[in-house]
Length: 246
Ligand code: BV8
Image (tube, rainbow, N blue to C red):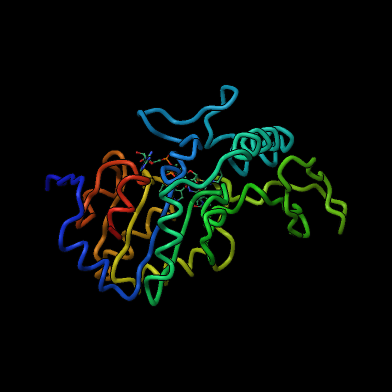
């Protein structure tokens, strides 16, 4: 079935947005693009750093093989992120939190920009770049912008690693289950700025749809999720999302 791409909100979506009691929002790198955060895929090719594809440098294997190089990659991304601010898409989503009885925001992003925009209770599926964790006792440490980060755990002295979920690693206990529960219960699921390729995150729209939710996508291009959707809004998240409340 040909996916119909819209630039304006249908009456059906507006009605469902205004009447829904339980809403799930899933975001990916595209929601931070207008803040200046590079996405991983776009324009057909995927991010490469110093000759290494991102899903290799961001993998469990690399932590075992060369943790200092993994830190170099995440230190570089933190310096990029530090001056960046939330954009209208983040701010709009933060406003939605108060509009619904049950509102769940699930993100694949590790940039912390949803929280900076005022969103609370954000389910971070893949961790957060502003945290480190001990490889053996799993103690967590905040990394402050502009400050030198620690290498060792003050508790047990072992090495610290980025507190993010790398490829080949399972998600933190209970985090995906919490998101899947909300997907099962929501009446409206809005998928924003994700290519829908990375699992298990990409299974959340499938769970919501199978449970009878109205599935809507906001993305600047068609994705692996589009054909599953009841409504596909094509354009920039920062321009489209405010249309839902005006
Ligand atoms: C796991 C943190 C158990 C680190 C990340 C099933 C099938 C196939 C493969 C697998 C499978 N199950 C598991 C796998 C393996 C793997 C996987 O999914 N591989 C993919 C590549 C096929 N999954 C895993 O390894 C997961 N763990 O399954 O554990 C296990 C263990 C061992 C073996 C098997 C199973 C862990 C995955 C998490 C990895 N960590 N991030 C870091 O950031 O470096 S993933 C990272 O990449 C992000 O968090 C995000 O999830 C993903 C990037 O995707 P997006 O966010 O969608 O970004 P992308 O650039 O792709 O797209 C941006 C979109 O925005 C585009 O569509 C663009 O059009 C749009 N856009 C751009 N600008 C705008 C816009 N839209 C609107 N407005 C704009 N302005």
